Image (tube, rainbow, N blue to C red):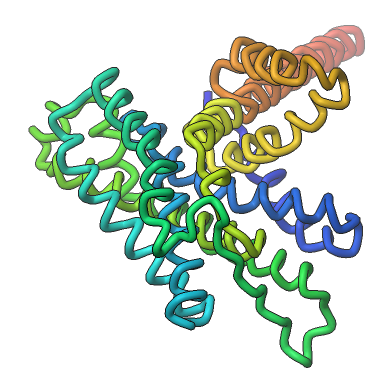
Length: 339
């Protein structure tokens, strides 16, 4: 049975509705949604390398940090604009992702997971060691760009729309990657590398490319996060960040584009809701909610939604078929009576 396309329609409608958020939400909620947008881009990259290519990566927070710090350093130290710094940050994250992806070819499963965790754990101490550039624990502050004079927006709304535009670009790139020949190559390497290689797929090149592109998404998200936050420090890129991205990807749906947004919203808002329930047990409530969602939605929230829609569609089709048979039986009965 084919998956119903309704979740995709919901996804596009939800994305379109995000354009109305600055007019609806107060400042702090808009700030949180902006954070969720940047997280969604990072989770999209993680979904590419894990969901569509089958590699384990717990280093997405590393590339997120690289993007954030490269933007901040170039803007504060070199005097570059954000629009010049962001592409350079994406390039830096892509290069690092390639360097990580090449040795990752020899690692699988738990070994690759441990290696990427170690890389993520090194980042905060390394930021502190490079205090000449990163300003250590004090962090780096940047200035948010002002909206053009012809655009009647506040500064926060303008930055929000920049993040939203970045999400739109990320979605279009992701759609191009997971559809057509590229998507088939990625999934074939995930499902069975030996068969994929037998059919002419360059497995090594595909895996490294997936890692590099995933890192580019992370760097892109980190750069936007720095712009939106106007500040960057080691506290923003602790080891927990990589686990948050992983949790968001799994909860939303690791092979779903729409799932990245669902997962990002849950990762951003669930801790605060947990604190409202019980401040002293916020961590337990948050962790328990994540575990429960993973148990209930094994394929993520989007997978659960698709299953529900498939069941509804199947039930509706079955009822329609029964109704057609009853009408046909009545017509036959009436025909026999008249004869």
